[in-house]
Length: 122
Length: 254
Image 1 (tube, rainbow over the protein chains, first blue to last red):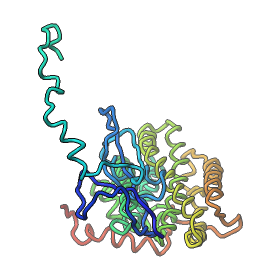
Image 2: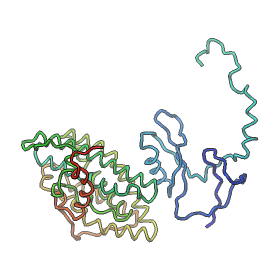
Image 3: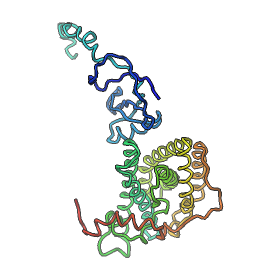
Image 4: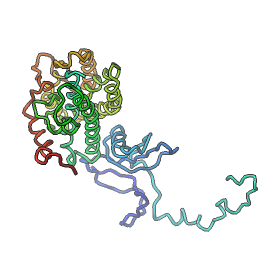
């Protein structure tokens, strides 16, 4: 069975093959489960942070797998999972036009302002 | 503490330890990496329960009238008792079979443990035991949840998974009756096995129904004897492997 997947880049990896397409054809392996991304909120943290990915057949199993794989050393108090194919990523080949224009705009950092003494706790 | 109480605690510990040893056989052989980790996590929970209970039993054995020459420890209780001295339920020692049978064994056992430990927690006459029960219940609640999900997934899965689950139920069902038949040392423990049995059956039925599975109705022969030391042939092999190191090299550590 052929299924179109959204192209996914892991942790900013640039793929070896000449990239650029937003989706590609892969032969779906019916003997493996879909990939899920796991987000964990730690006790101190306010936001869920990407912890990694795992395989599971459905959302329930993904949550349970995430509990066993990513929270066994008391890492978290809350888990989110999302099937990896639903995460859309920027294309590394477009990194230039997307991110480089910000490089020479250092004035966007709030470091050029004289702060009044009254707010020196900032 | 009287001997009945010590035997009772040992039987709780033995069931957890022997099931842990069985589940441990999956380590490195799970169907997928995530489930390999899941089953070994459960195994470690069970070993933790067994350790608490063995330590508690050892304390009381060492204070009792017929205290042994060498003081009992959690290790001596786990590694230096013979097959006849082990009081685990027969269900815990049954072989892993396939993944489906392992899941069913865990589901039947954890559900039983859940309702039994509820009573130990609420009884309140023995604060140590109820504290151990309370701590264990958090783990057990997850074991019930995890195994229930798998029973449903496999029972209501493919033709092949359903067939395997049906075979698993057939293999294990005859060992479920013993759970609710009090051994002589359990008579005085003020545990309401009838209530446990009713609640256990309700939970099992609701999950099996959702899994489109059935279990044998009454009237089939139920094996007993594990709680009083008369085991199936399985336990000898388990102990041979588990105790080999301490038997061959007494007191060895690493």
